[in-house]
Amino acid sequence: MSSETEYQQLEVLARKGRWLAISTVAESGAGHVGGPFSAMDIMVALYFRVMKIRPEEPKWPERDRFILSKGHSSIGQYVVMALRGFLPIEELKTFDKGG
Image (cartoon, rainbow, N blue to C red; front, side):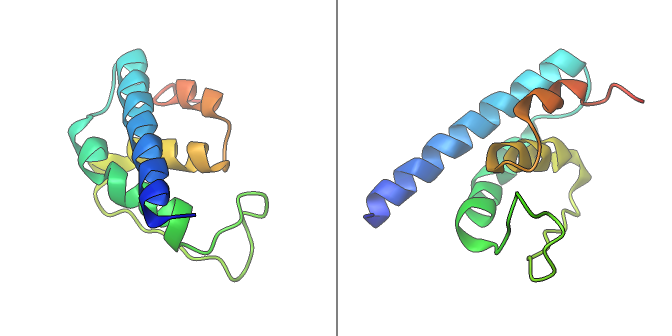
């Protein structure tokens, strides 16, 4: 796969991630979109091309860990993790719902 094609795939994923982030925030009535929007490209690149992870085996001992210190971007991390297969995208609808 060419690097241009790979880059385009990451762009598509980041665009979808931004759409999911704004949809989730709008539906929940809580959260901010500025943080997730600005961090989406790097989170997509990390989760889809850089980090050693196995969504089907989330407790894999050799996995890389991602620590997000920018709390206002948490919805972005949830979105990227859903896109990567760690949780169903439908679960984003439970954001800020308590329980």
